[in-house]
Image 1 (cartoon, rainbow, N blue to C red):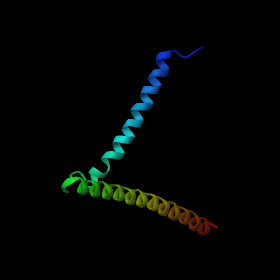
Image 2 (tube, rainbow, N blue to C red):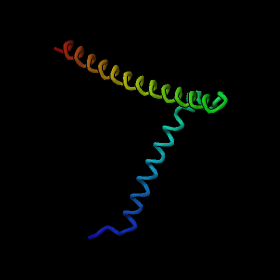
Image 3 (tube, rainbow, N blue to C red):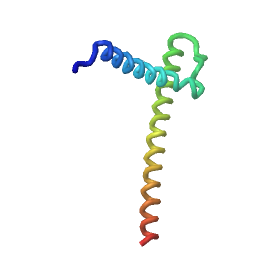
Image 4 (tube, one colour):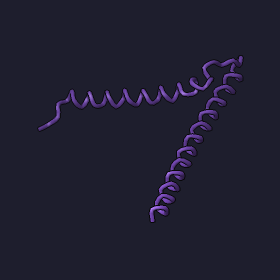
Length: 87
C-alpha cells in the first residue's frame, strides 16, 4: 500500500515547522540573557554588538557542555563509590 501524497507533504510541513522553531529559539536565546536592545550607535557599534552577542552565546553553550560533563563524572563517581561500599 502506498502512502498518500498529502501525508508526505504533511510530514515535510511538520519537519520544516520544527526546524523553524529551533532556529527561532537560537535567535531569541541572547534576548533572554539581556541582549535584547542594541545601545550602540551606527553600523560599527551594531557589528560590535552582534559579535559580542555571538561570543556570549558560544560561551554559554560551552558552559552547558562543561556542566553536563561534570554532572556525568559526578554520577560515575557516585556509582563507583556505592559499588565499593556494597562490596
